[in-house]
Image (tube, rainbow, N blue to C red; front, side, top):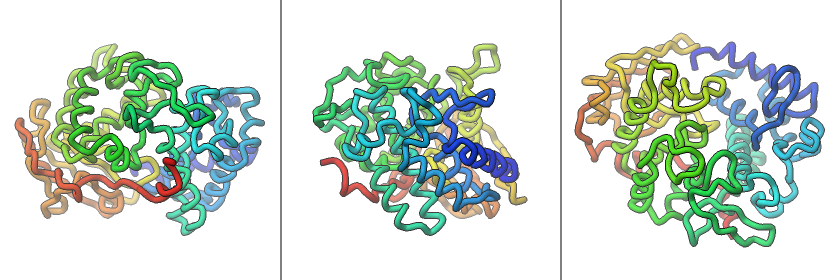
Length: 388
């Protein structure tokens, strides 16, 4: 948004690395790919860059490279030989079964990482007019559904024969730095279907309330672990469930209880700026909750005034009347001087220059943003092919 030239240059560097080595790096350091962590993180990075206005790179080449990495795992295996975290390891199982079994490291976590990459590929393909690729990867993006156990209501490990392995929601076995209670929410692009499978909004809100009993619980307790990235977007799940005032409350709790200017003022490892970035977005009152999609979930700004100077020369002004640590609740919102009820705003709207005027208070307005049509988008394409 603010540095599209520099971001485009970063994407060109990713493309250069892919062209030289045969695949996108996973975790490069010192001219070497350490290959740690599952997934294909270059895909949401590239799709997100494009969605938020950084487009000065060879976009068709980027899409081709993303598709190649997601359909020809042998190119990644050359980069990360004999490494359990290789980006598209066990690709045959993934395509055949629609999930990764616990025979592979962190099967449920890896499946969710891969489906996020698939969704990101689909979004860039759609933006570039490649309908066939979009449809193919949206089907794969919905593979998360195959890891949801309807008997327990959690994303769980599933054997090669299709049977689920029962796990305690707090048990970290089979998950990458987390557990079933934490990873089950990691379907940011299709919360609607996830919530319907859980039993509907009322059930989901109760589960979220319980989940936020603790805010930085670690990997072996069934609550939010704000010190690790898989939980970053969960506070905005309430927006999708018709209870945005609860998002506003829990975000403010996290800001005031877990962040400070003291030496221990971050809830976890900074990890290349991720903790600080979460705080900046949360303080602005908007959060990019859906990978590869140009838009933000809305909550409440922490400051009376903030200005974002976009790279295209436009300005986004965020005003928070009565903003303070003790006034987290949105009473009303006007965008460009018109009433605004949705908890989602597109980057296209902001990219033209915009003024967001929040009125805040210390008691929730449970009507604002609570209608089904006020929720952020969920992407349902491809669902008919999964969940059998």
